Image 1 (cartoon, rainbow, N blue to C red):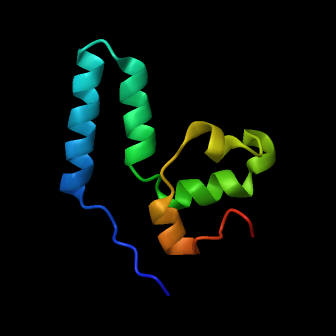
Image 2 (image 1 turned 90 degrees about the vertical axis):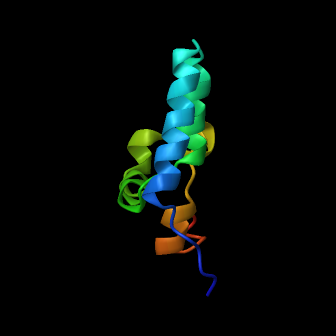
Length: 82
């Protein structure tokens, strides 16, 4: 089984700081996109959405571009298709 590294708190904080600088520069959409695509979605949240996908919509993860690396590390790379 492939070992996936979990992002450290410092790495998370660095991304958040960069994103908030974008917001301060008047780029809120870029800020939001950076947070969504670079910060991994917590595995329990990804599982919750998957378990309630009929409410969120089948293309929710794809449409929103969430980083699912940690959810895939916990539940397997195929957890969305199971």
